[in-house]
Structure formats: C-alpha cells, structure tokens
Length: 320
Ligand code: PSU
Ligand code: MN
Image (cartoon, rainbow, N blue to C red):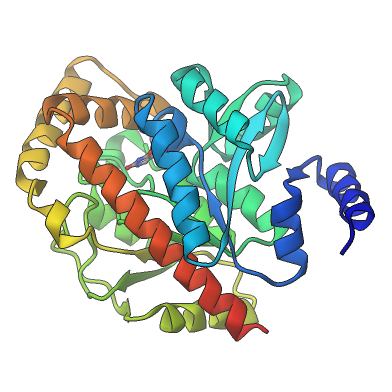
C-alpha cells in the first residue's frame, strides 16, 4: 500500500469512528499482521513518572521484538488514538493523574469536552475492537472489590469482557480485589478465563489465589486456537488469559500481601470509593513496600507483553 492509500483510509477511519489510527498500526491491520493493543491508565494512574514512561516504551519494544506492532490507546484533546507517538506517550506519562481515568462510561464526555483520557481495560477493549485488534496486553484487570456485594463496586472491565470479543492478557487480578467473586462474575458474564501454564488463577503479585479455572493453555499456538474458536463461532464475548508472574519476582508476594491488607484498611478509614479506589490502593501498596510492588509490577507487565505478542503472532499465522 502506498502513502496515498494510507492517508485515504486514515481519513475514512477518522470520519467513520472519529478514531485516529497510527499508519503503522493501520497498515499491519489491513495486511493481517499481528497487533497488540496496550492501555494507558496503567501509564497515568498505575505507576509514577518516570517509571511509567520508561515501562511504556519498553513494553512497546518487547512487543516489537516478539514480532507484533504495539498500539497504545488513549484519548488526546478529545480524539481517540490507536498507536501513540513517543511524544504523546511522554505527555501522558508526565501528566499522570491530571489525565482523566477513562472507562467505557467516560468516553463520550472526554471526547465531547476535548479532554485527555487514559483508557482503562474496558475503554481500551472498546477501541481495540472498533479497529479490529484481537489481543490486548495489560498488567492486571479490575474486578469485584472486596465487600462488592454491599458497595456494588464491580469494575466495568468485567462487563466489557462479557460483551466485547477481545482477548486480554493479564497477570490475573490483584488481591486488593475479591478474586473468587471476580471469577464468579466473569462466569456469569460468559467470559472465558484461561490460565497460561497452570489451572490456578494467579493473583498478580503471586502465582496463586486458591481459585481453579477450567481452561488451561500451554503455548501461544494453543491460545491462538482458543481465540480463533471464540471468533469463528461469533460468541461476542471476551477472553481473559492470565499469565502468572515469573517465579523470580513472586518471592516478594507475602510482603506485598501484608501491604495490601494495610492499604485496604486505610482506604476504608478514609472512605476512598468509586474510581479512586484502584489508583489509591496501587499507589499506597507501592509506598508501603518501598517500591518492591512497582518492580514486580513492571516485570510482570513486560512478561505479559512478551506473551501477548507471541499469542498475537500465532493468531495472525493461524488466520493466514
Ligand atoms: N489493576 C492493576 N493496575 C491497573 C489497573 C487495575 O493492577 O493499572 C487499572 C486498569 O486500567 C483497570 C482499571 O482497567 O485500573 C480498573 O479500575 P476500576 O477498578 O475503577 O474499574
Ligand atoms: Mn469501580
């Protein structure tokens, strides 16, 4: 495809969905090459500057090294972008929490107000699906919060997985959340939950949660077949692939778990609720562990990026 074609089609995208797709991403999509979507709340709200910027860039490099094109998704000055330039990434990273955390429900407002929005898992899935990106890598997804049966604080990530056929690669769900209820809720939503190399669902910082899942995949190819079956049958639901944290980083898990307990107590005392809860807990756990949780977080996101790229490449091959 020559330059002129790319421009023409880019315009169609902009007109049709008001979405700007980076030419490299667009080119890969129309040619059936592997693309991996990446979220931006993890950059703005999940990690401090400058680690967030460094990690975002490294994650993109890892995706490339493993044969896929990275597409970080965010809303900038009211326009949803699929694939950010280095300058755009840096702007998001520096703005940090000044950028609006954008879940599905926040999209119309950020766009109409011309604001900057960092997309959560739910909003990133929305945009990935609109442009046909089947695989999306993150660190951890949102879930049912502890005492969610009273607060009804259930992340829209779970309902999005129930209605949008995108495969999300994560390290499971943090134990700041209620993991058994999160799995129950996903079952209700019809979400396929697979664990890579295990039957036990991981809890982000550690490989264990005490919860078993029925679906296990042991290779990128097997995972690609799972995604393809879901898509061939047009089930319309998403897939969550949980990749356990690499063993060498799981060691600090117990210490991190204690910090999580304390952060949860503080959140309750300070009445931190709604979409403030997850960022508060993540930042507090990092402070309490003296940065150990951040190091583990960065390591597992990179590991997920490697796996996600391999899965995306296997899927592209399967569909050739
Ligand atoms: N869990 C993490 N790190 C994160 C998030 C969740 O371990 O950065 C972010 C993701 O963007 C996720 C969002 O989609 O928080 C969920 O927020 P809430 O619980 O408000 O739905
Ligand atoms: Mn919530």
